[in-house]
Image (cartoon, rainbow, N blue to C red; front, top):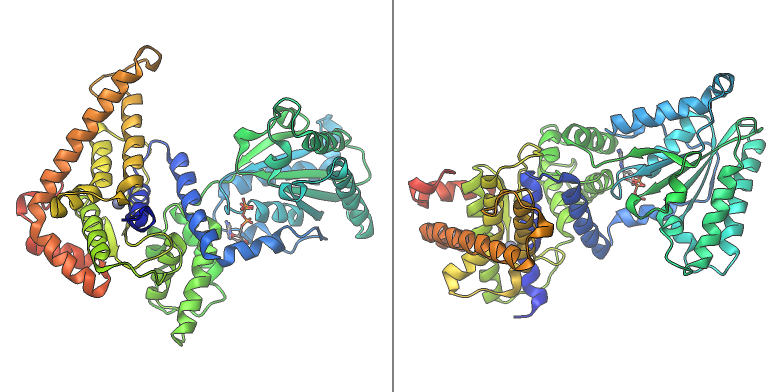
Length: 501
Ligand SMILES: Nc1ncnc2c1ncn2[C@@H]1O[C@H](COP(=O)(O)OP(=O)(O)OP(=O)(O)O)[C@@H](O)[C@H]1O
Ligand SMILES: [Zn+2]
């Protein structure tokens, strides 16, 4: 079976772990999901991408977008406003001899509203807004990039004068492209561009006629050249993170405001199911839901449209890729495995098992997230690993063999094992990795993997009837709702294992 086909099942587990929300390193994982969803989004040609063109518009006077138009992000907004107050109360700052803020760096995953924040900053300070993106500097001839930077700053000053404003904000998206760490003498062109930017910033002083502020955005702060982060340059860092549940509600409400919404729609439940979504993905979700409603000629956007839109944003558009009947069966078995163990670990966690091809996937399990967790015990990590392994174990149980569809599942499992060992939670105890050989680490991780795999297989063997019934429904209906699935479990699962131990 070709690799592409059975990749099918893989995003499921990925979403799983994220949706369980049990991670010690939430950010890493969150960035992970964004990476993954982004991958799907760009493949499916989502409207999100189309936004981009207009976002990097070069010239604008004062943007008509305020902080109220940005959902959630209260901490970042607060920090940003505080920094901006320096710009507004320039005289007072001068009086105290405080050096003006010249650069603010916004960092965070894609689509979290960094561009919106920069625009709102211009609105808040009544500044003109001039924007560019690092990507515009790619493959420019030597000298052109530096000239572009010079022009940009000049443009900002000219525009402010023309509009009779006291200040201008220069926004540079994807700053990491021009401000990435230098390696030897390569990237000479970027060097010149970066140097020009630094020169412009160094030239900003408190008593200029037009006060300039540079706001830069990146989702790879670790990549930036330290010269950029020095005092007097981008010395204010504001993290713009993925929205939490409350923020997701706020963002959804903002984007649903101008749409006909059915009365019984629960925005809260949508926010529950979109853990790890960025603002941009939430916006896309509301848009897709409206399209589904329109397609059905429904007067209002109903819960089911929103629910379909979640799948679309998460996994990509439904594809009409025809899997063979054998493949469909195998994917169904695989996903049922994930779902069974997930319910065993945390009853109520499965929100949908689906056998409809979407993006690169042939099937997937969608989860209700638990509460956000930042610490976890050995048992919890082991359970996560079991959920990962359950797809392959299910195939093993039913077919006595496995396919290539579980590759990502293993990667995810291995990441968890590494975390467990690093955190001193494995049988090796607390270790200093420098003194432990790779061989020892490898042996320990294989041992964990093997034990948990056997446990998972053993557990699944007790669910034969659930597999049979679930398979039957999935092949016919393509989806099993969380409720339906739990009903099956209630009916067919051995009572001793139906609840988490
Ligand atoms: N907090 C938010 N509130 C409302 N809408 C949001 C929010 N965050 C993102 N969006 C939506 O997502 C779109 C993209 O956001 P924006 O361009 O600001 O993200 P970004 O962080 O700059 O992304 P990138 O890193 O990809 O440039 C916005 O136009 C808006 O529709
Ligand atoms: Zn899987």
